[in-house]
Amino acid sequence: MCGIALSIGPEADPAVFRRMLAVLAPRGEVTETRQENGLLAGVRRLRVVDRERAVQPWVSPDERYVLCYNGEVFNHHELRAELTRLGHGFRTGGDTEVVLAAFRQWGEEAVRRLRGEYAFAVVERATGRAYLARDPLGVKPLYWSGGPGCLHVASEVKALVGHGAPISEVPPGHHGWAEPGGPVRLRPYVDLLTLGAGLPVIDDPDEAALLVRVALTDSMRVRLDTDLTVGVVLSGGLDSSLALLHAAQLHPDCVAVTVGVPDSPDVAYARRLAADLGVPHEVIELRPRDIRLADVREAIRISELTEYGDIINAVVSVPIFRRLRELGVKVVLTGDGSDELFGGYPMYHQVGPERSRRLFLHRIRNLCRTELQRVDRASMGHGVEARVPFLDLSVVELAMRLPLDLKLRDGQEKWIVRRAFADVLPDYIRRRPKNPMSYSSGLHERARLYKPLFARLHRSFGYPLLEPVRRDFDSVLTRCGNDLDRAIADGLARPDYTVLEHARDLVGAARWNAVPVVRRLVGPRVVRRVASRP
Image (tube, rainbow, N blue to C red; front, side, top):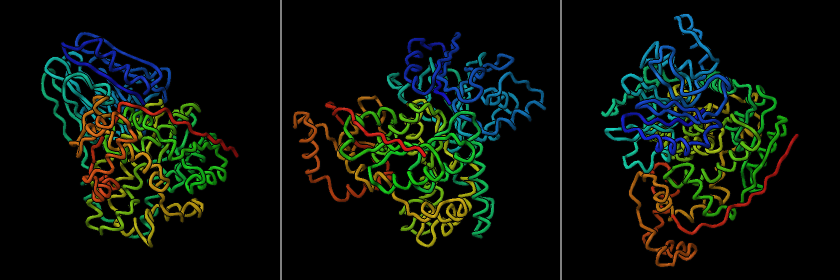
């Protein structure tokens, strides 16, 4: 996994390119660049697969193409064997070389053969044309901006701000060409909304449970194919517990990290499971009073998120990945995506099958701008590669074919996942209900106090807001002499901050609320770290 940056065109500026790459420095350990007339390409590479030889940017044997690549292709061994039979030679054991060889062999159709989490740019050196591609779910990010004289491409928005041009996202499951001095034309190569549409619905519980188990086990297996120590972000819930079960089986030296409020049920369940599996486990204790404005500001800077619920989750995620990096862990499994796929949110219970399906499709399409963006930035902001086994395309397609009553049954969310792994999940995990830590612990309400300040923080970093701010807090803060406590009290007392707005805030993930910020920062948070080992 990496952070990539490219400046393509006659106006490519080495100084601008160096700044872009410097912004991406936390994403990798080493800087690797290629600079030639009209092409500046670079990577901050996190060395995971073939760490010594899989250097980037990678140049094709005929020197026609240059590749900058971020991510992991989990079927690169199979693709390598097929491409070898077709006459391609390989100098490394990494997936980077396989991606470019696949592109040379199959052209734009190559992306349909890739199984993984990736975003990349292939530049045709003679013409300056650039082929851009992003994985189906948008696990890995890719953005571009530019004008007639130069196209900039990067893994994060923060590398592109300040160029004076609009910043655009390569949408999930899209690919296409950027012409020199011309338009960027992208089109979908996979449509999540029609995924599995031509296949029959699986309504038999036994068949569904077997297929879910096979698909998830295989997805875990390929993401655990590494010789590095593996970590797991362990919440104590169903999804991360499954990840830890698989990790402990294939990597006995794996570690788990949990963040939570002292004495919370989540922490207790996480401790119990780690102890039962004999996995070294660290708990980062975080109380509501520990969340300061400086933490919110840093979460916004790292995550580039605009919806406040996601920002709050990022506040909690940052210390997890910071600690994993301190432990020397580079590869981490998370349970993200399971709630969206398998009916893990209470709202699925409440709206009925038809509306639930529409909500399900909406959340899947927007994962790249919410949960996945948070996970990518929080992890890569500390040089840690997070892998999301629940979002393998095969798992997503299978979930599309399952009726709602297999996901929500007997008052239990994710029922089919619980049934699929009933013989390996401890009862205390399998039978416990979902308990969202940020809402149940008071952390969310504490961080919500800073919500009126988010928009100015976004502006301070140059990040574009996706929607207009509903109400401007700047004048309130100014009137209060930049006193944060007075400003928050004044803002909360305003009549336009209604019960309805509060309700909308609590379900804001579905509405993309863009909101508000501050000049005066509160000191850094101090957290207690509790280590437990079997």
